[in-house]
Image (tube, one colour):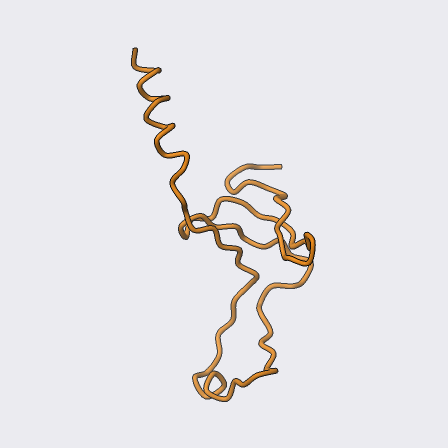
Length: 86
C-alpha cells in the first residue's frame, strides 16, 4: 500500500539532525567599526526588543517567537508559524 510505504519512509527521517537558528536581528556596519570592536562593545540591531524573533531550520524561516529564559538558558516560545495567518 502506498500510504504505508510513505509513512515508513518518513519515519527514516525523524532522527535526522537539522540546524535550528534563532535570529535576533541584524545590522550593517562599516568595516572600520567592525575592526574597532573589542570586548564590551555593544552592537545595536535593527529589531526592537518587543519584536518577535525568527526561527530557522537549515536557513528556512519556519516560525516566529519570543525569547524566554528557561533555567538560566535562553529559549524561544513559538508565537506563530511562518506562512500561517493568526
